[in-house]
Length: 331
Image 1: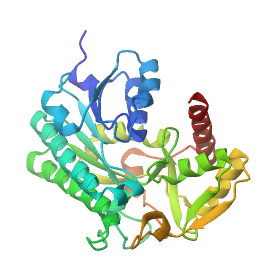
Image 2 (image 1 turned 45 degrees about the vertical axis):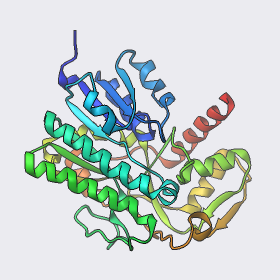
Image 3 (image 1 turned 135 degrees about the horizontal axis):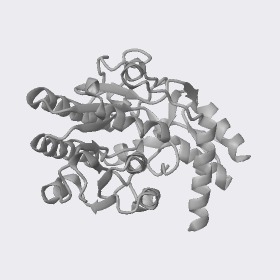
Image 4 (image 1 turned 90 degrees about the horizontal axis):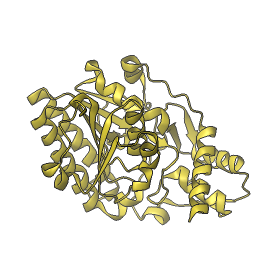
């Protein structure tokens, strides 16, 4: 028996870190998932757990969204989750053209597809859209304040803000069911430190006995939320009509300084790795700006779906260490 549209979902970027966990969550509910990913930052091996848990429910199509969607088979879909994007501070700084074009052009393509097929869509956005921020904690209706266009660091947040405008414009013009999820620091197994993500970068260094590189003074505060809390919330948001046409912060609101995170990693791994401080200029080049505190107001998502992260950070660190140790030993 062929699945109905309601039993099918399309996940772009589904072989990536958050996307692969979302795929697991969907197939656990019996949903047939088509994954589109060009593997520029993801890996097909990230889908192994979902395929093992639900044989036959995961179809993988390699390619960019814009090239794949016109010839995509397997629809119609009951839901689309657009997670494909250029991600990571290092990638943003080193390849701003790729960042902007991937984020804006691919999002335009998938939104056009969703509008033509009348398919509800969740757009993955980022806390970077707040730019420099106007207050703490960040609220979804805050003004967005960016630095000058001559500083590449802001291109990611600006491109994702354009994505949000595109999605909400489709919602207003065509009544397309759209949900925008602004992810804060999402962490967990399968996250790579290659593009600057701090937790896997710290864990990899601690496991190898190398120094943990702390940018700046390390007193900048972030809120870390386990991907296994984040991913199951996304289908709940898209399924709730009260969420359609709205923007939601998604993450934890408990702040941790980078120095505290480094200490937690060393304790959890049992590492004697020293800490070394590196200036932002050394890490990312001149004119790089960072925020002292990046903390979301979660009132809106709590009211909408009762979102309440439950996985403590020390467990996340231990699971990331176990996953990375297993990856290294398998090479």
